[in-house]
Image (cartoon, rainbow, N blue to C red; front, side, top):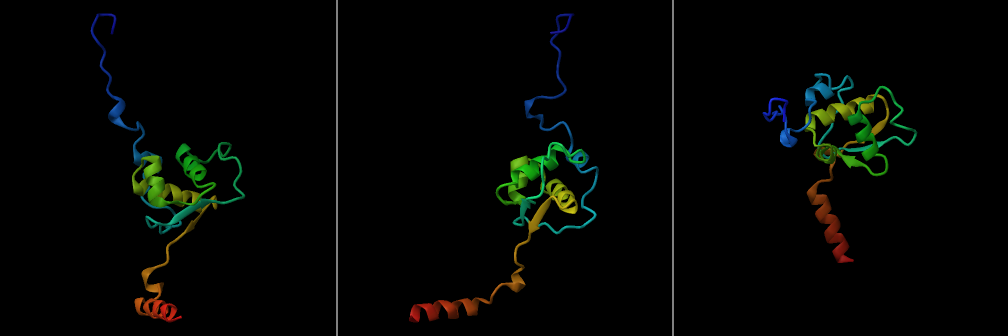
Length: 131
């Protein structure tokens, strides 16, 4: 309550979400300089040589959080977006920043054109059944 006896109202509440807008986290960028193609199922893992992330002055808290999440276990881009509760586009830019600095490695899924033909897989299955 204020000195006049009126209840002060807040311009925010617990449901408001983050105070920093997503575009501010990426400094307005929608892509990185390296133009990394990051599919939803691309796996991100922190490079083993990366040391104390908290001491790195150039990283935002979101960059550090991504690198920490990927330190022991590879995480998909979609999983990171969910874990950070950030839009996918923002997470892609942040991962691209880390990849540009060679702090994370991104493993992309095999493109459908490079997958084996279904008829070949059927022939293999039929051959195994014949044994």
